[in-house]
Image 1 (cartoon, rainbow, N blue to C red):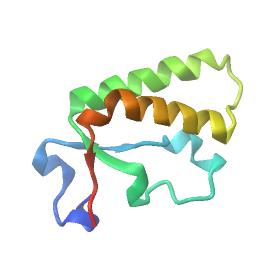
Image 2 (image 1 turned 90 degrees about the vertical axis):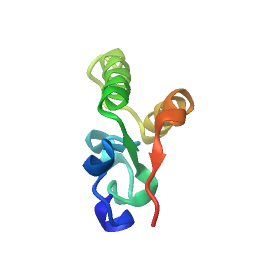
Image 3 (image 1 turned 30 degrees about the vertical axis):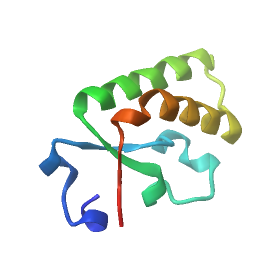
Image 4 (image 1 turned 180 degrees about the horizontal axis):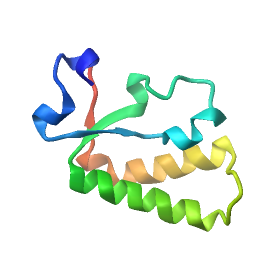
Length: 90
């Protein structure tokens, strides 16, 4: 975030969250560290989103999801947690 906003996320009590987790980045052609994939979140909220991704991942039963499935999950989590996500600005 610092290179985009001039501030480090930690200065604002935030952690940087990847909307599409790095774990699934290989399913997409875009750079996972692009601004559109990054949001700031408090530690508590980031933990809640990470927990939701972990529950979803366990539900896959060890298989690799499709890019479409990952995107659908990201959209669901955006809908659920979007109100606590702070956009990274250029």
